[in-house]
Length: 404
Image (cartoon, rainbow, N blue to C red):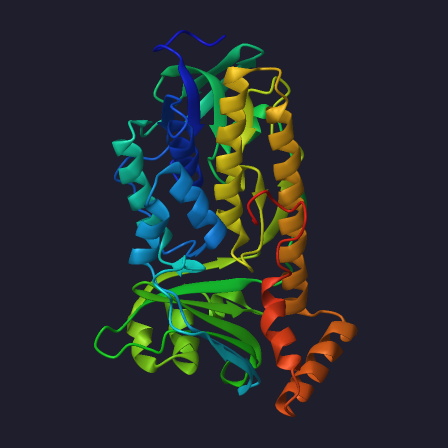
């Protein structure tokens, strides 16, 4: 084993993002002592809104781990009542839902990930979770009896179990030698956050544009969240990304798709070619280290499957560890690895279907989209298909124990 450090904990969670914080709360809800080890400092900068959409299933899991947390997020987030889809500048679908019923659970909420994390961190501290900041994981020694976690500051921490929630570049996954399999999107996407103008706010509506005429036929998605807007632009495969990304690039095209005053309200810009990958295993050979969230899978963001599936992973991992502490032969750890990997593969494929629809490289899908748009403009119900398809199919049997 690595050199001895402080006394062992029942569980260590690596990573203090929403997945790691969910895992910590779910462990504490079972009375399990837990330490969170985070590579970055406590006052780390978290640029951009990142994940902005929390599904009802996730809110329920968070409420179970920390009563009232889901509704706290709902109270600080927003829910849009109207969604619209346009084809080359003309509306082909719209739906407005009735005002929220305060006596019924909200179906979702939308707020920046930074705010989600802050609420979760406060709940973790109140629940007695122990945090170790500025502690990147650099070594891992796993045996049938437990795990020793070495960090860059020279400390070694011991635990019966570890949940790796340390993101896409997971140090834990790399140290375990677990590979990820999948593909990457052909097109780049530019992701922009803009702050809302409180004196003259935009209508709170989700709007998707197929082939927006103001940006030479590129797709554009506008999504509101508490305090701002997410604007996604899909570039073409042969685009010069520099002409669209970066503050200067965004300021050239953004005023064409939202009011020009928002060109001076940009708070974050990033660009991606989305990975669609799943880890070969969600658990190590000794059944002591469990992978969750982006340490275990990466999806295109359509359908908001990333953070939401990570929350489900974290909850399932915590419950499996609780069962393993009570009875190491229970089989729940293996069941976690099997069912959550199955869910990840479903979500990867669902996000991939949405990505394929968005990119529409083949003539068949291109033709299907054009026919649906023509039918919708003529009054048929084909617009509903155009509205649904950029988000992929809904979760099906076996995709996850809690929808995502």
